[in-house]
Image 1 (spheres, rainbow, N blue to C red):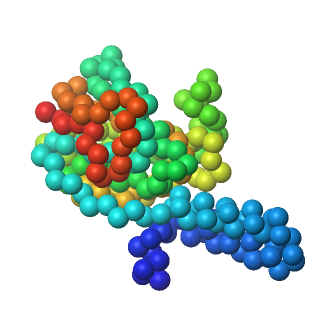
Image 2 (spheres, rainbow, N blue to C red; image 1 turned 90 degrees about the vertical axis):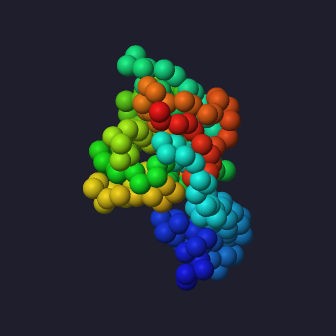
Image 3 (tube, rainbow, N blue to C red; image 1 turned 180 degrees about the vertical axis):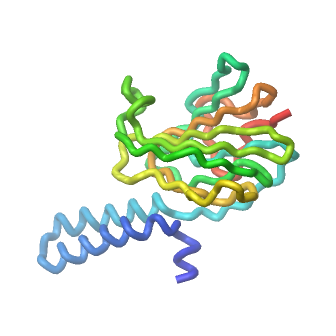
Amino acid sequence: MNALSDLIVKEGWRPLGIAAAAALVCAFFDWDLAAWFFLALAGALLWKYRKPARTAAYFEKGSVTAPCDGRVTAIDTLSDGSVLVEIETGWFDAALLTVPFVEGVSAFETVIRGTRLPRRSALFDTLNERGALVFEDEEGRSVRLTHMLTLTPFSLLIDTTLPGKRRMRGERYGVLTHGVTRLTLPASTRVAVNPGERVYATQTLLGYMR
């Protein structure tokens, strides 16, 4: 079981088990097409909920690494000077969410259950399921993360015991199967990525907070 837990995140066992059980039931009744469908679904879930072997790369103090796998879809400067970096996590990306700081102190705001409309929908920003967190380093520099779901039947899962605990960069704190992550970085941040680039949780440097 320990070997299996090193391969799959714990949140993935329930949907994976349901799909595998459905495949067995369909196979027992000789419903071949349905059995192959659920078997393929189980394989897709196994890939989605995989736990890739990641080691936190060494970066200097003030560095911010990607909290998720995906592709950078936008980088904007907001009216207060802070920097917004948006990352879209697709179906072929691992579902894990990881702490982007060294010794980050996190504040968990809330998870709001909602719809899973596509990113292009005008109601995406108001109706979609989301969760917000704030990570702060020992020097008081903070990064706000907002995770939003799109086109997925699986809920956004975030560890609700985060507040008040010191976390090391790379520690896993949740699961996002398909959606958008927005990071709001301090105005002094030097961004190290460009729109269109692929990023990987824990390993890709997004920028330095100066």
